[in-house]
Image 1 (cartoon, rainbow, N blue to C red):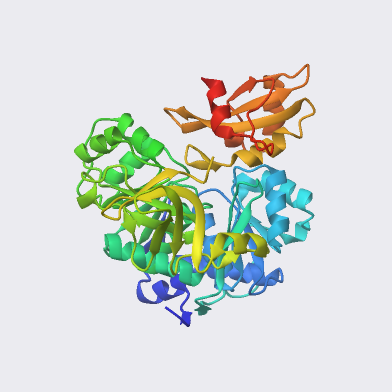
Image 2: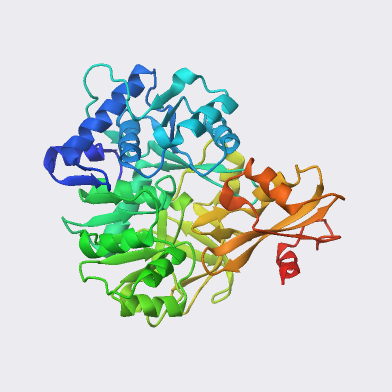
Length: 483
């Protein structure tokens, strides 16, 4: 699709004004109501001097306020910068500065972090705007058309160098992602897609945007609670769900009741689903669709259909429509996963070097390792080299190592992921230290500098770390130090 496309919420408000747009445990709003609320946020931003093309950061938990802010920011052509609410104020401040955000939107639960991040990042307090009571000048802003190649969002995703990179995602990226998903799973007028993943991640944000594009309903939970999710699937009409493997396991462990046939699909990403969990899910009526995706491709790249589940258990399936995928290796051998197509980011904001390294000849070099079987099904073998996936959150070892090395008693560090039944993986650190090092003190020190899910649950002190001749730490060997 090229040219212009209408504002998604504005269009749905015109043709489906009374259809439920967003449902939370506290409130449900129609498309007409969502359109008005988004217009009010747009007016408040214009009052603060925000213009089309400006970056507007959003620090909010899963909520109606988050949804309203997303559509209000884009209503005036500004660019959404969703911030991970689990980051420290120092980490948030860096992203505010890197994105050049003009304004920071927040609501009550994140007020303290927003104020600290703004102070740390040098953002004037006049640039802060509360979503709980946004000041509005005059009437709400009406919907306008957007160019399909305009930037919609900048999604921060970490890399092996430890510094996050802001992947630009356009209206066209999200539109084509929604279309590909629709071709894969279909769309029903009364679909209700449950978002219990964080909306500041691309997987959660995609649920919100696809629902607006389709004119269906986004059901937003404040976070993942297996009991609440099971209740929504059985008694609240939810037909689609996106989770990570550990969430799926917790849903199954919560009770023994079956799931209704109204549940059309459970997309599971962020790692493979074990055969044991898959068999339990299918036996209980959970239509599990294993998937592979990443921020730089606006979420989904491949998805395994239910028809192929038995024969290709463990696979992430085949590419969605209009997406091309290949492995940078000989046929049948493991290699880097390369992706091309209309969902792929045009690049990283303000980082042409990273863009040039990652996108070459039209192919996105994901850094993930996988293989294709003889039937063309993708098997993901490693997530971004040494990536740790803990409870659905990505932890990049280099980022944690860089902070650990700031500790006055740590001389060298290797961060790895260890298997964990509840979280999938937990963070662990092998460290070379000076006399007087205390793991408990280091944990407290680290919690002030990185998000809690990045803090190592285990430390082991060693005399030296395994390294190559060039001095690069070999994390796969460091992992054996915890056995």
